[in-house]
Length: 197
Image (cartoon, rainbow, N blue to C red; front, side):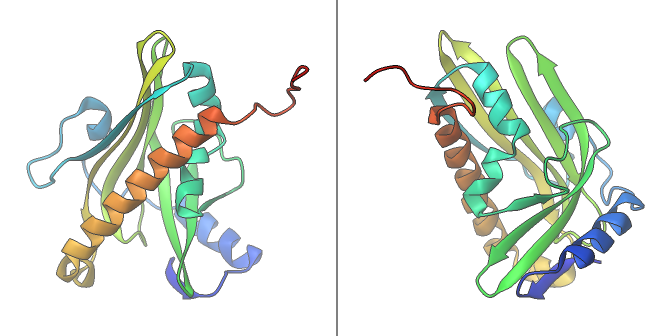
């Protein structure tokens, strides 16, 4: 269905991938595990955390705009996909001369006064099997903890053979997600104007 292709896919090809993903079931059996912090016995939890200055409202706005995915030069199809349980989407990211397309579905949303985030899980055609969480939490006045938590493993035999490389790539991607998310908190909100210098 998706996976790897040389060069960029056309809009019609991506639409076809998205329609197929919308008809697909989750490819794993532990939805919500990253939110609960309870990885299944067969999956090792990987967690990446950064603490930053900022307001939760800004972290939420950045997450709703898919700012973390800028860290991997990724884009979301459909553009502006809502952070709502049940949303099916594609994460499309360049990797050298090829383009990776990863189909996912949002399986949980955390929307509380002091924390906000979501988890999405893999669908057929994804290189991995499992789930990833993006979570912002208030830990003090004007202070936030941003977390990317992963409960996933390789989906194919080839990916299992290259598991150490997949783990390294996954860790690098998570760190880039967090860096891009933190950077977005420092950006001027859209539509705002600065006062006199």
